[in-house]
Each structure stands twice: as C-alpha cells, then as structure tokens.
Image 1 (tube, helix red, strand yellow):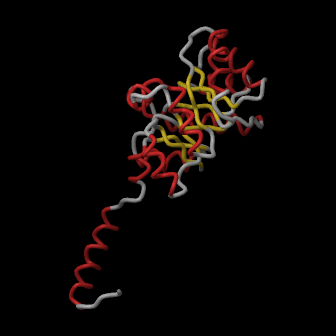
Image 2 (tube, one colour; image 1 turned 135 degrees about the vertical axis):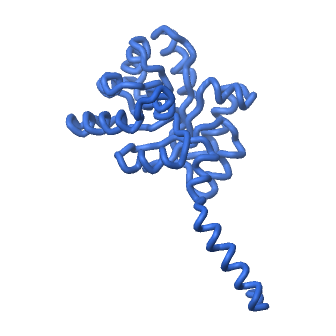
Image 3 (cartoon, helix red, strand yellow; image 1 turned 60 degrees about the vertical axis):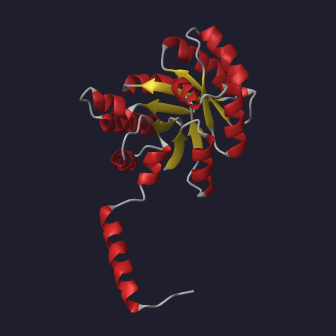
Amino acid sequence: MKFFVDTAEIDAIAELNDLGMVDGVTTNPSLILKSGRDILEVTKEICDLVDGPVSAEVVALESDAMIEEGRKLAKIADNVTIKLPLTWDGLKACKVLSGEGNMINVTLCFSANQALLAAKAGATFISPFIGRLDDINLDGMDLIEDIRTIYDNYGFETEILAASIRSVNHVQQCALVGADVITAPPEVIKKLATHPLTQAGLDQFMKDWAKTGQSIV
C-alpha cells in the first residue's frame, strides 16, 4: 500500500520523505490555508521534493472553470495530480483533463456509485473520506470494500486513495480491505511506529543494560 502525506507543510513532508515513507502528497484548500503559503509556490516546492503524485485542488465549481484551473495547476510540474470534487461538473472536468493525459484525483467521495462514475470518467485516484463517514455513524471501511469489489469486478484501473484518515487503526483496516493508497497527516503516519509494549520492552532493556556497567563505544 502506498503512503501519501496529507499536508502542505514542507518540513513534515521532507522528514518522512527522507525515510522513504512518502509515495505522494495530497493538499486541499484547507491545508493551503493552514500553511499560509501561495498554492502555486508551495505546490511547486512539494513537487520538487517528492517523486510521486502531488494533488493540487481546483476551487472552481463549474466544469469549464475547473478545466481552466486544472490546466494551470498541471503546468507546475509533471507529477501534479489535479484534484476535482465529485460533482457532475467535477466529472465533466475529469473526463476532459484525464483525456489530455493528466493524473486526476476525484475527491469527496462518499458512495460506491460515486466511485463508479469517477472510474468511468477516467480518474487516476478516487478519494473516499473514511473519517467523515465515521463521524455520522457509518463505517468508512464498508465503502472501501464496496469500491474494491466493484473496481475488481470490472477491471477499473482507478486507484482507491483512502482519505480522511484519523487513526492508525484506519491505516491498518484500509490495508486489510485492499485500499491502494492511504493519505494521512504526518502525525498519524509517525504513530504507526509506536506501541506500548515496544516502549515497555525498551525501558526494561535499558534498565538491565545500565546494571551491566558496559559501553558499546
């Protein structure tokens, strides 16, 4: 499973990228606001830093304007992925922009029917929002499973990019049900390395090592 980092913070991306933990990056208007950076400038910097797809989102609501914005974003770098909302206009833009050879991430997906439409419109990635479904007492993993089944049934090449990841449990569950990619905040990815028994074992080793009075170097 590929790891995308859901942030526009350069330092956080660079830290994970140095460890080989970054297969791509996703951004959105909220993350651009949080970064305090110009969208074109920060997207270019991210694209120069990582080799994988970097999602940059349009803000227009009508298809013609989405296409215009998407074409401008695509000029930033070869690894830009144009991020479009899962609306009828977004699907129209997806069909045009994917037909021009651009990578497309269709976002804000909350149903398997939406995911089916996105695949037929040529989306590179579909982004079902796990956490937001959980927030309204629906199981986001059920949606991932349904999309996986539909895509496998018909051989769609659109990759399932699980988004709105809130916890390490979400990451594990997505891997188990067959998501191709997860995008998560840096702090969630880093928490994958932690376990209370690991820390407890390390604490005991250090206590015992101190009693030996030895030094390795």
